[in-house]
Length: 179
Image (cartoon, rainbow, N blue to C red; front, top):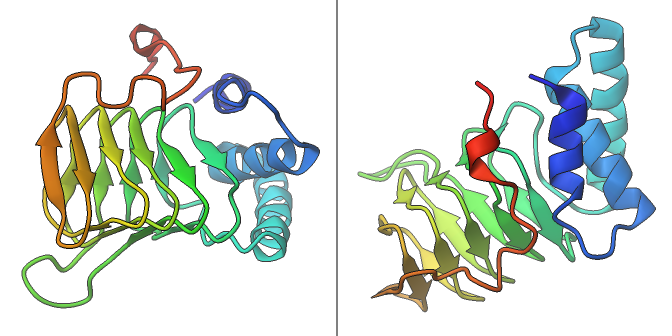
């Protein structure tokens, strides 16, 4: 994994990039992918400090695709077992969490180009497809197909081509994936 390219792809998603957000993304990606164990520990510690300072519950172990964007990032929570695809946008107080019992026990998997609005909660072992807009303050605990808008509690799914157009800004070109 080319860490510099990954960081650049994350940072390219912002119209206005504050110094702390730049440092947050650098420390996250280096804590995830640094080959040198000393460097990885250093960036893990820095990432931990930034998480606490800005009330962000996110972990280096979380599988996060390219182009992560945090808008007004305070209070964002992402479970360590969750999976985020490419070009995911999370707003303040968004929660990507796990359920601890029942048929949806586990954490969500979000596809590519998913926009999660302020205060939205996505919980349980569910799949959110590609090009999905999750409206502010929605509670999502069911699978959501690609090209949809989901809103409310209980969640209501509205099929919509290009659901995130104008919301997922500065997307990373998907054909450039190196795996």
